[in-house]
Length: 243
Ligand SMILES: Nc1ncnc2c1ncn2[C@@H]1O[C@H](COP(=O)(O)OP(=O)(O)O)[C@@H](O)[C@H]1O
Image (tube, rainbow, N blue to C red; front, top):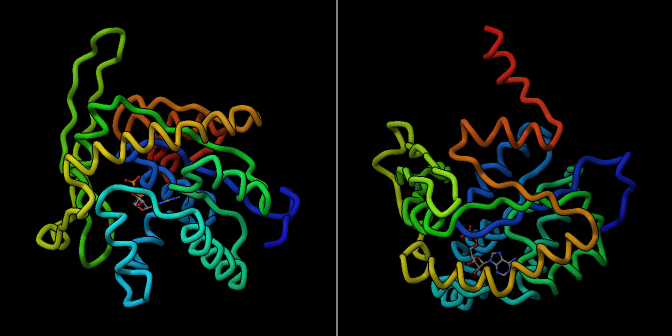
């Protein structure tokens, strides 16, 4: 992987945030808007799990307990994905789910320049509900969420409403739940996130690259605000607003 100056390539951003925060949703929307690939290491792991490769059975046990895959395995999967993209002329990326440990952040820093790190944040009780509401269409692979979040503001925390993200009719009967989205495994993943991944926020904060973003609600409230803090405009939404 060769380092390229920022002016000669597209954005190289990282999305951080607890399981269930919606990293995938916002990273994939932004990647479409900016014309860069959305690379989620969780997807790379699931692709490997679905294959008949030698890693599959080893990975299944780790992932189904909510534990982290070794830095070596995850970095191999990511390097392969970045190399494939480079060969196909891709420029820039939005990384989702990587780095998950300070060690991974250090390895990444050694090979590639990260321009900005967006840290998405949401209350923990809402995160659990959102993880348990996650569904994937077994045919098209798109993510949906059946949870309807409606929590009152209390103890200085604001009220949050998040409408479910329901699938179109043709996906409805093909919805599946990830094996690692049970309550016990979700709580384990959140605990591991707090122990292993929160220090990654500090790593990027010290580099002056961290942008903190408290999600104010669902996509209709959060998307325009996120674009605003990123100094971006959504041409599609502008067209709709002008119509
Ligand atoms: N950077 C990483 N380091 C180690 N394990 C990872 C990494 N990214 C993904 N995984 C593995 O894949 C699983 C699913 O990842 P992901 O889809 O990102 O989960 P979530 O969206 O719930 O945070 C993780 O629980 C972990 O086992």
